Length: 320
Image (cartoon, rainbow, N blue to C red; front, top):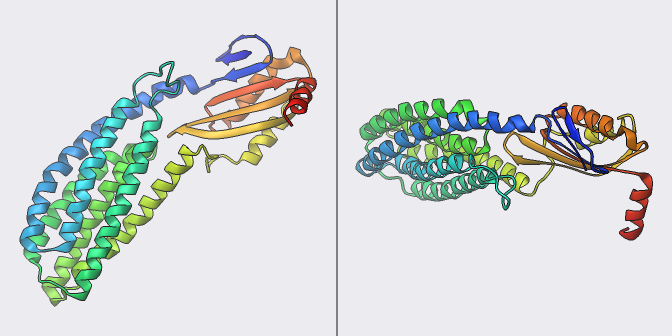
């Protein structure tokens, strides 16, 4: 087996394993996690304090929009707590039993966060439809006060989470929860103003439905992406056909087969492939070219099995 690690190699036969920049992924990941932990702690503290205030405000004003937003706040506290736990545990080193470490916890947390948002959204829409049939009087003054405060709190929480939300599916799930509450505060604010100026009580359930539909779109995308990663689907950012063409074009490679590309966790893409080579003396040269070609697709963890034509034909004769 041949292992290529940043310029030094050890030859042991016909297999190649190249981490390339993968060794740096751990250091970059720690920086992202450090920022994630700080942002998640701040967001969790703000959300937990405001949740209590919003529940009291929803009861006093009899507002479904505020109650719906408080429901989101409750799931936010749970989601942010889970995200904080995951951001911590995913920093633990790999073990002989868990050779990739705890990175996949991030994907599980993102899936659970997205699924929780979808369930809460379904409940809110159900309640809103009931309110449309029989509108109830709400205290728009209390709604305005609580919604305005919530808007400020959620803006701060979203601001501290946003920088790391694109680099981590876990943080993006938490960010979506906070963003959903921000939209909830806007919806409650608009509903309170409409009720105060026009007396239109259905503004409250209509605002909650509009807010929830927007939230469901982002939640479904988060769930879908999490499922794709858990199923080890090819990342949307990596065109598999182009990867195959790049590999086949490398001097010394006759053909490639058993090509797989998948996401380990946010920002860490892996690839494995079997390549038929002509000259055993050029194995290291081929591995270096494979590593360079895969860096074009931002693939950090590369595993290559180099084979002679006879070996490939013998294996396929035994296992057609």
